[in-house]
Length: 153
Image 1 (cartoon, rainbow, N blue to C red):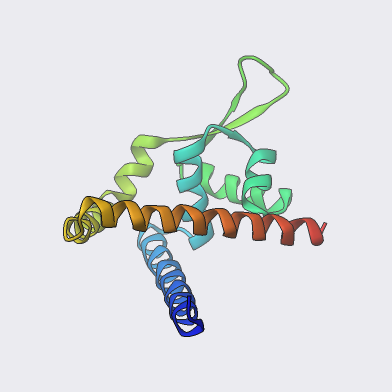
Image 2: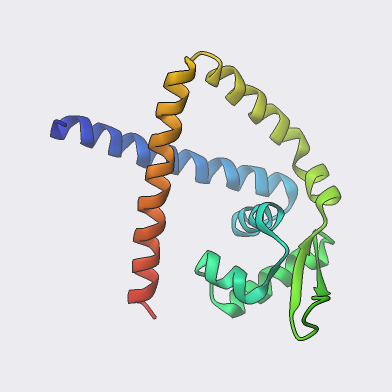
């Protein structure tokens, strides 16, 4: 692959990252949250329930920062702390899916609709190619992030 193609894709990758961050900040602001709280509430919704330690590990945030975030989300009744039924020493962070979905529903539906329209312009093979690229990119970024986090421990 030519250097200019790689540079162009890298530039687009940075640009989509930048606009995605700005979009999440705007969605969060509209919902009365910080960008971090919004993103990690989304993580809890998709991957939870999780312990605070698991959240810290998955996000790279310190345990203190995770505790403060959980406190803010719990104050808004978007999450709750629940004792693990199989190990009462563990406290799980459980999302209030109804309240969270209601909070993000307007922007979520609109964005989903726009993305579905865009995807419909591609063939099945093109969508598979794009999905493959995105999965591989996610893997690279996860590995790179893990390495950076290990270096800073």
